[in-house]
Image 1 (cartoon, rainbow, N blue to C red):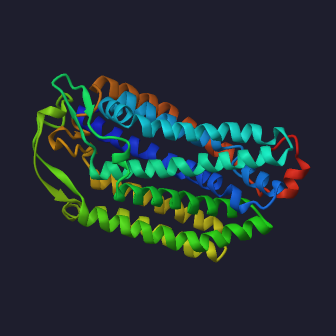
Image 2: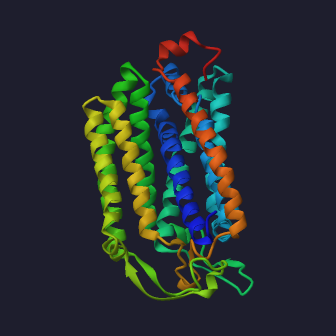
Image 3: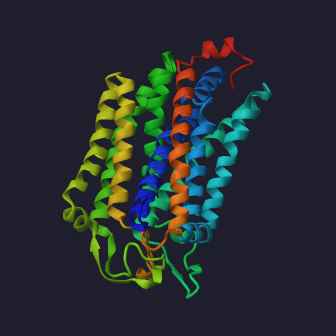
Length: 378
């Protein structure tokens, strides 16, 4: 039904949709986990904070599993390069995520304050560390990673974990954390009342400007301090995947990429505009609309990243000609077509179920409600 070129573009879009869905849903999960020890002043308040995401955090995290599965099935060269070269960083993300199920399920098993306080800080680690490390990953994707392939297309990563911690990547890590904190504070304000509601509002007053300032700095850094390899020749957009078959010339800036397609400027405009409106709307107490604007802002920034990188998926800083694009890093046409139809059937089911879960579990969570439902809530 679709030719090879079209399927590659479709799967580039699908991959972007999964990334956006993961960021929007797990983003406020991570943010609330990172805010937990600071916004809750006693055990009941902290339990109320936990239960704002208690019924949905596991489903939200499934988007990360889907992203890993999509990379494995659709972009195998990207999967092999990332998961082998960035093994330590990926393990640190995984180890941090271990605190989340254990913290949610075991925190309230004992009434000892030391036990519960320890798990509160475990949930803080599980909420703060992943967005920082994933932000560092994004920063390195923008700058490029030192990898190359041999004649058998086996990837070789020549960098180190500490090499990932360069100034721009660390700035992106700060942006990732602030983004989750801001998104999480809005969601927390939306789901709570009283003192917790007011504390979330006060946090947003500070987090909004901090996020916009660091995001603007990162954007300027990308626009004037990074570049993309220029593809000179390649076999064709419908040829079999082989990243060694193309040649690249001198690099061009991200601004050149957007200037060549002016409609792309809509994405950063939506990104900055959405986050600015989210901040202004949230502090005027229209929290539902603020959450919509925050989601639009996050989506706009991720679309800006995707548009700026296109057609690249991974840029090699050591061997630019070995960089991976959507045209030379995908699985076979049959695999893409099979995965497409599986997605077309099951993705609407997943989205419908997710919408139903949020509808059923929606409502304000207060310390009084937690006290009255001691045995059914976290």
